[in-house]
Image (spheres, one colour):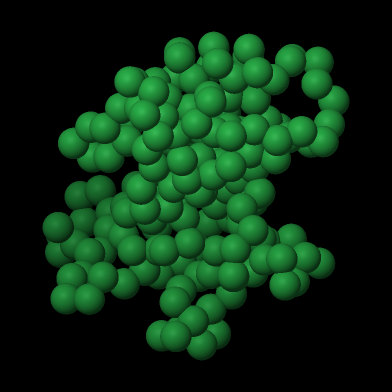
Length: 188
């Protein structure tokens, strides 16, 4: 077991939408610090980084999940598990939909769409490094480690139909799609 202060490796610059990872610099530093043949566990601090001048900085809101995804990409991980206070991604907000169920699998696109439209369990910044490096993400709950949680990957779980409902108060958006709607008067 070893430990790593993320500020030694992770280099970011601050852009208009928040911190932007300097991937080349960060990968070079990671490769210098962690030998490719290392066989063990490395505990890495989350949420923090260094800017281009070497000054300590943070990744901002949801920075811990974001840093986990960044280090999964830098280490070429097989998967990333985020342990959180829910049993997985639910089909709706259980405070509004008491019968909400755990979704077993989502595609990256489905997960990003849910995040964009209000699902709080998946920070959008976390998805970028995972999608780019095709690393599956598992959302699980340490209180119920026997449950499989939700797997988010390129292919999802292949099931059709509505998987989840999100709510942004004061807004409604409905998307209808499919070959059966072509030329049908009314839906447009």
